[in-house]
Amino acid sequence: MKHRNRKTMAIFMGGLLLCGAPVAFADFGSLNWVGPNLDGLSASAAMDSPIAPYNVLSSPSTAANDRLYAVVGTGRSVTRVTYNVYTPIEVIPAEKLAVTTAVYPSMPLTTLATGERHSLAVSQDGSVWSWGSSTGAQGGDGKSSLTSPMKVSGLRDIRSVSAKGIHSLALQANGQVWAWGNNSFGQLGTGSEESHSGPVVVLDNVAAIASGTVHSVALKKDGTVWTWGYNVSGQLGDGTTATRWNPVQVSGLNHVTAISSSGSSTLALKDDGTVWAWGDNYAGQLGDGTKDNRSIPVQVSVLTNVYAIASGGYHSMALQSDGSVWTWGDNRYGQLGDGTTTGRLKPERIAGLDNVSMLAGGLFHSLAIRKDGTVWSWGNNQFGQLGDGTTINKSLPVKVRTIDDARTIDAGTYSSAAKSEQGKYFMWGENSSGQLGNGTTSPSRIPITVVDLNGDDRDTTSPTAPENVTVTGISTNLICIAWTDATDNVGVAGYDVYRDNVKIGSSPTTSYIDKGLNASTSYVYTVRAKDGAGNTSAPGNAITAATLVEVDALQR
Figure 1 (spheres, rainbow, N blue to C red):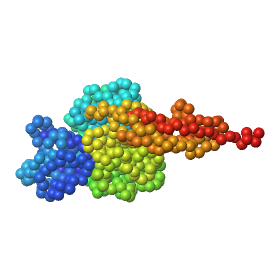
Figure 2 (cartoon, rainbow, N blue to C red):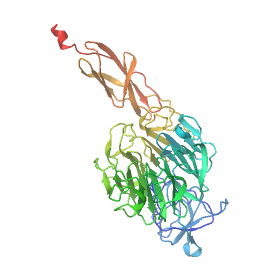
Figure 3 (tube, rainbow, N blue to C red):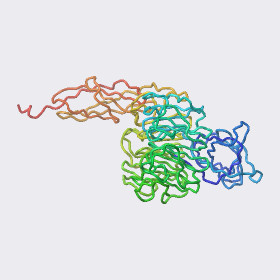
Figure 4 (spheres, one colour):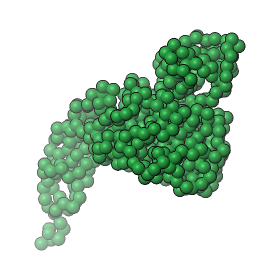
């Protein structure tokens, strides 16, 4: 999800500010903080001026004793901020400083990103770690697949990453954009179609990055947007459908404070609170009331006073400053969160979902962080990417299990990710390429910890054995069994079922139907629980069951 600055901001250039996490709004007068990541915030009352922390990524000087002064809110106060923290140190009357105006985006720095089959994370020291499929070498290490994080060489002082497709982007503290991975359609922006196993510099003077499936987007510090890569649907916004191997400026778009992209469309948030969109409009995800593709930006209908945006595969989302969520576009799996599977050509508010501070869009699912730190999800749940312990699609928001202090989130094709206030990295959903980073390729229906990142330990605790395995139904060719749910320190991801000591299948629930059996035959069943880290329980109690005798056999 991408944020904008709520009020006009003027900057006195003289230092470096690198804000590492999203925070919504703060009122220095009352200290009534709004947002999930407020640790470390302290200040004197600032003359009742509404203030929001901003992500100013660089300035002319980076000397250790340099300062940056920001006139925020009403412009009646000035706050000095220190490097890499949201810590206003002192309040100075604005009239005492000569201030020059500058436009900077207030997007959160994306320190955890998940894409089609790979994931990225920024460590506390500014290094980048990758795991999952290395198709096109998007992991930066040249290997085919990684099931646990590996450090990407050649990168330092990284503040943000993006990984929606099969390539990767990273934003350095100095404003340089680095890219690596697949480059079949110029999505690396290097001027050729040559893929790169290691990061290469693409652009500078950049404040924010976003990636689609096979195109890339950058927001420069002057408020302009630049794009490159595949352009068949107009997703580059340059008025053409021609593929671009180098960055080009989006037509007629200025004063942008946030960007978001996923699939083949792109969103931009302007400093006046309006949302603009371009590219693929197959399901109405551009929000202009049509299904016509757009090669130049068009304004999204209805929306004003927008604070943040998020783009899904074929749907879009916006967060207004009052904490309400608006969605539009494809809804075949319930990813709009309105309780239906009816698509929308214009934004509509999700009833009952409020106090939201951050959004993220996957291919067919959506995520939100509420201001209490809980994570909510809705839409497609084929691989458990909603994190509610099931694989059932949801058209209304449901709470993600085990996470109550989320700081940031991201959604990939069929996977989801979150980072907690304590700096723990969690993932859940599809894991066929190791994109969950837990050392296995087993999917998880609940959040699990990414291993070996920032000192995270591998989970070695096995679930308890399933109990009360019983027969719930039989016929001549099938046997139904059920059992009591097991427990685990981070949650049970599923169950493996054994017939006569041979594994015959798995179940995400506490029941299983064994089909295609011989009539009048006895079988012995056992069940083992497993967690997302690949730990397996001891077998539960064995149960013997026999199929029924066929009717014609009885007649003989």
